[in-house]
Image (cartoon, rainbow, N blue to C red; front, top):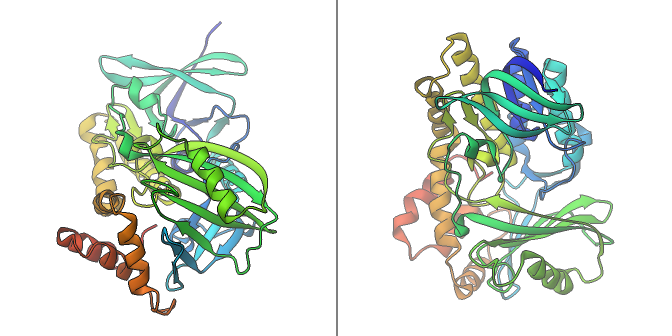
Length: 396
């Protein structure tokens, strides 16, 4: 027998975007149901787990148990092995996403949201184009939940947005196919984030080594979807590991897709808001998704509170979310996307020449602005994008 319920908001997906939205809504006294298909929030970890320290501090007082490692140095390796080292403004954190995500979901529950794990969204309740609720399947059977608003936070593979009629199609060039090992037995002194570029290493993307403490690191490769049909990301990763960290011990393996696209044309519909990777709100230049997910969840909650108070869940009301996103990160990410399109087309010889030109610059003086200006010096149409991008802060 199907159970029936009624709430103010159903949030589908308990990642950073969904948990942030659920917590902000519950704190304001709304009846919120937060559901996730996994049996444990944060598991499995499908993320390199790197985030800017300053960026994360905009949202939380950072808890020590969230942090696997702190870094203040970045190395960028050209295809020929030359590297550039940056120390200026490079404060980063490598998270323990199992703990971080679990804490965010717990925070939402403590604020008053009901958290239901092992609960799948299997359809939407629709009424003449309006989203009126969700059909859920949980440990106790099927559940029909009427809601004034659905927030789709179900990741890059989002089905919820598609069920509502939103076009979530990604071009191959706008999605990264990623593979990552958790590796042990590595010499990582001092801890730093390392990025490797080149058509033989990671065509259309990059490889990374992010330290996790105790001689462990996330070692991964992300390649453009344009190339994934020729060789898999795992094949590129295995070659990279054999060449760069041959003595490491493979302790875990994950794969996944990362959107590196423009944000969806519409991240809202009548009775619907879409957040995080489901809305393609990750940084298209780096693929980083944690900070934009937190921002999207917070903005969506603010708009939802106002819309619910006005009893107006129409597109005319909920479009304020898209406007708020554009004012916050959207305009900058549009510039990130244009730069991504240019950078992924650079031949290896240009990357090598950039490293050769700048390698004498001292690490505490070298900036990402200089690197981009040097690598893209033959693309004058992008100068304004580069200047705007680095006017106030480095990319997330």
